[in-house]
Amino acid sequence: MRTVIFLDLDETLVSTRPARDPFSAIGQNFTSLLRPYAQEFLLELSTAYPLYLLTAGDRDFQTEVLKHHKIDTYFLKIFGRQDIGHAINLGKPLIPGILPLLIDDLNPASYGFFQKFMAIGNLPEALQNIRSQTLEEMDQQEALLDDFTQVHYLQIKMFGGNPLDQELVNILPAIFQKAAKLNI
Image 1: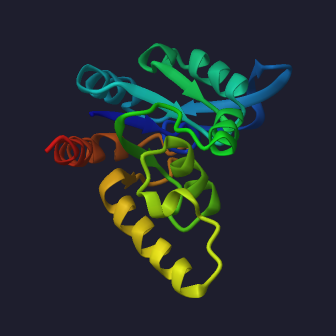
Image 2 (image 1 turned 60 degrees about the vertical axis):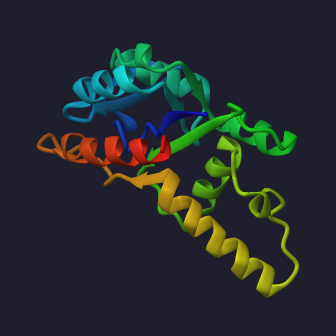
């Protein structure tokens, strides 16, 4: 299996908000700021690993945001909330047979985070049917998800539009280190 990196978009690579110095995306006006060093970050990562965008946002809108910032070409595919829901409903991963590493600003305790991991797939079998009935089963599944998260997730600080942000530069060594451990 090969290591594949899934990156979140909003508050990981960009900060997008309604109006003020707007660009138009799908008939709506938004302001979107690219996180400092995003181009360099994506170039370095994409030379070492396949990159996919995994966003809880609408795929078409997020594609427009990527194109606006001229960073769409770094990603092999863009997965939006439609794709996440579809993968979960089918019970099939977005990309089978991979070792996923998710880089996101989401808190691992959030439901949106869990949905992303369900869609990525390759969860331990005990997590694939998450419809627990007993508290003991729920505790076991939570422990398994914590273990899985330790290996397959790296939380990045939220961007928030700070022009002095250095997080992409700071986190890059940790990404390479964690990705290398997946390949062992």
